Image 1 (cartoon, one colour):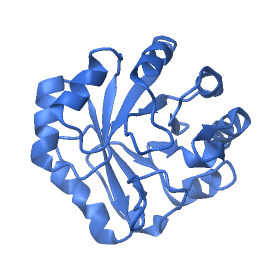
Image 2 (image 1 turned 180 degrees about the vertical axis):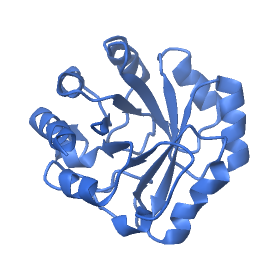
Image 3 (image 1 turned 45 degrees about the vertical axis):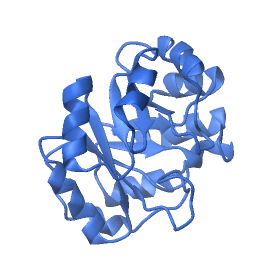
Length: 213
């Protein structure tokens, strides 16, 4: 079975269409003000209405308050919430109980200790994402364009499906999928022409490369 693909940081109709035409299973919308991929609520609302049935609309948040989540969900029809900050298991439980949406919990990875943090979220998260840990001073917890040591995940067996993220590109996603067997791959900066601006040709090339493996 071919790996699923998530294209994250979509902000335009053109990028959305490229992802859908290419066969992406997940479309990510970033609601984090300091990210170059941050999307305004009214634009996200319109784009989400264009996503066909069967493709998951994912809202990415970083340490969100209930008020922040409510402000988005009041207007934007999302299928899943991706928590990309330092949300504790207790906080994930609160969000899931209150908003009743599946949760993708992301973990920044630089050592094996970062990977095993996922086990504390058993029965809370519906998916895991393993991303490269952002360096000190970086304004967002992901989207760095850097990859981490994939071998850190090679011997792990998780109780939930998981996504590989961090530094993936059309050129190296095939290599990654020969080393690991994630349920999905997640890309943002690797399909951009400049930081925060998606490249439609790169989106399609990434999806095609992932599905060839």
